[in-house]
Image 1 (tube, chains in turn cyan, green):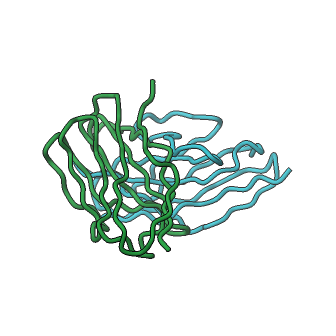
Image 2 (cartoon, rainbow over the protein chains, first blue to last red):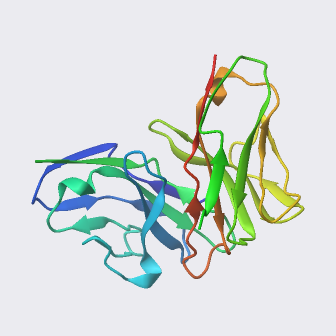
Length: 108
Length: 115
């Protein structure tokens, strides 16, 4: 079965510092990978997907098939980035599988 | 544009009681899902549906039932509530699964406490 691992439950960084939220997955083929974000009192929403190779709110994520990773990065953290971040994977015609999430806290 | 709407937002149940969590979407999506979110455990799939009349079990289906009589609605039924079902429940929908980087749209969640 596919699995998504987010090793950090909580990540605290100072405003302006770089951010890297780690995500590793277990699947031997070519998965679809996503980052979802949940801001306080808001619903879960898509942040970015690997297939689009886009940058959203300054965040980027690169799929590394050799390391089976899809880490989320931002060069300069902002206070409004504080949220819960979930890495998710979809394979073939199956529903999304989520990691346990990482809470990012950006300290002013 | 309402998207995915869940009701109720909050509910307290006594052990053994039953209830239905409602979910409706107005985006004409074929795929709908129910997840539960427990602290430190992420989101776990309870049931999903690929279209009206078709449902399938996810990772944690025990204690729950679903039905999909229309494209819009996907209610989740708890027959005999147990404290282990205390959680936040999220309904989601997507136009398709898998290939193509499909986005799932989530409801605001239902916070259920079983006492």
